[in-house]
Length: 158
Image (cartoon, rainbow, N blue to C red; front, side):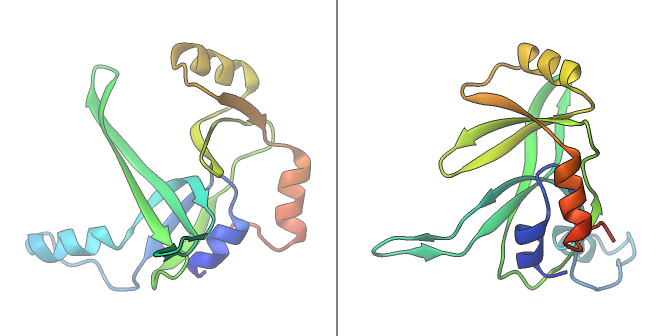
């Protein structure tokens, strides 16, 4: 899939794989492997941003993938996120979509919501939100209608 297809079709919370189509180099080639890893990986879709146009600058639509958190003892020190433009030359694939009944913890930032957490049910989401307070956060349950729309419109995970 192209990047614009992910922007148009994937729902927040989906797991996305991205790739440049090249083979993984052997581990002994550290620099080549590092470069390869920067263009091949997976992440959870946490934000979609519409195109912006200003008097002196314009940017295409983009989306952000959360690749992981690093820390110790329950304290996150670094959160790794990558933002891709819909004009990216990489290939993208939807690996997993959120299931019916799961609940998203979202926060409105600027023009679009950002996924803070994806919980298995409303109780778990409310517990997470109580332990991790955010301003303007709200919960959104994944409904059968949303999942059905993905299937009907041909957006089922490959």
